[in-house]
Image (cartoon, rainbow, N blue to C red; front, side):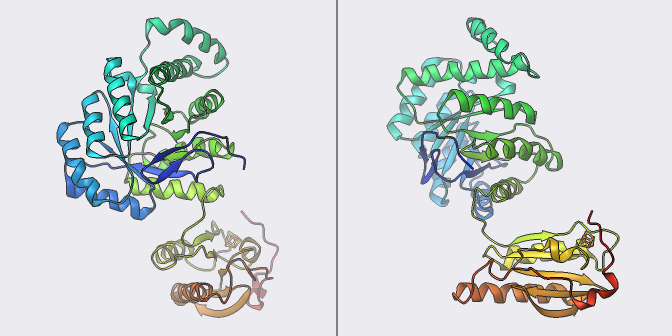
Length: 398
Ligand code: SF4
């Protein structure tokens, strides 16, 4: 996939833009001034794989907590500032690695300039984040908005897109005037189609790195789909340098979903096992959903290598679907037939499948770590085993 060329910025030790790996961010959900809680939440996000963590600093007591927080965590921290430019100055003084600013809700341009100058001195970047909810029409920008509105006239909510682009341009003029280019851009909306439209436009117009996200996406069930449909489309076009999946649930899930999205698009090397499983159907031979949940939880805890593990509910189509798996189990008549690197190694009753499968994964992990074999070698390319005989009816996979 060809990635669009962008400038690079550095957030703590993490590079964003250019050919740097696409980073995954999230934001703490608790109060920043509660140092212990905040540190614990940041560490949970880091453990889940977050490259960068953002914290809100609405009050002075929040920025006052930053030095202690920064001393206890080992990940770049971004201070999220709205309305109060002094919070940005305090956060920069405390040593944060980046400021997220919505210049539109800091009324005085001199206050924005003070933040820009402080970031320049501290050599930290600013994300200019425009959200659909904070775009306010300005009479002096009417002409530009009208120009852009005609450009977007064929699109749903074209006027809103025009206003947001005009806002980004307007803010960038302020930053250009200070010769400050240590910037990344975001423009978030709730509608996935509009998010795609606006980032495509930003990508054409500016070479600053882009922070992708969908705002107020809703609960996890729908919010994850909303986010992933928009971000997946953009990333597959090579647009986007850092991402945040966001929804109303534990931010740890946001990080996990963001990483999985990058894994699925081949934009990030997988850490830990990759589980593939059939969706189940009327040919099912074991309690597949429970087995898949159990395998998933155990693999997360025990396997660090990207071993591809397949859990298939029967042998009719299972082997074909498990093609490429390093370890696979095919269910048959309340039993599990287990394959490792294409070789059949066990045929165990249903209640022993989980333990045996995990044992085989750990053994394979050890052999790979010892340099005795490689993942992806001798992967599953089998035909259904003899036990499948009663099941070898013509199968139609759902
Ligand atoms: Fe699973 Fe496919 Fe077998 Fe149905 S036919 S149980 S979906 S492997």
